[in-house]
Length: 152
Image 1 (cartoon, helix red, strand yellow):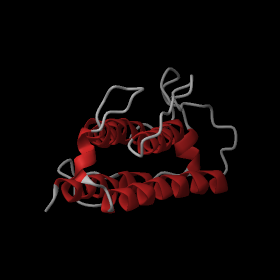
Image 2 (cartoon, one colour):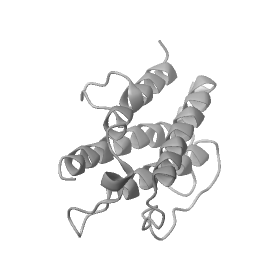
Image 3 (cartoon, rainbow, N blue to C red):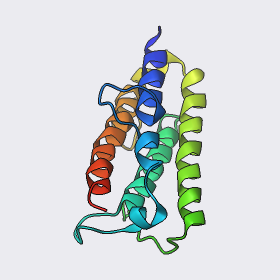
Image 4 (cartoon, helix red, strand yellow):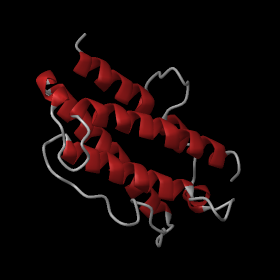
């Protein structure tokens, strides 16, 4: 198995596979209603929904970076208040998360491993660090989602 294939497997396992942490994004989010996702059990913390939008934003941002584009994160760091808390809006958010996963899977299938050493000019991180970082970012926020899900 190549390094790119191992990374793709780690990415997929955390999304909806069999990761070493025994919880996945899909397995956790499929049990959360739109009402629970928008709830704010701790006023100073983000809602599950806001965290999911943050994940989507960063997944797409980093994907652009490892495709050679210079991308700046928005001032709000992809954390925005949820205006439409309907079931259809929640389903759309979940679809966007799945779409981001498919984009990453497609990218990693054709990734040239020599590009791991390329450096993104804006962040000064190489592509390997970016790709590992987004997996770690997903795992970090999945932990937050799991804790919040127990509170809503």
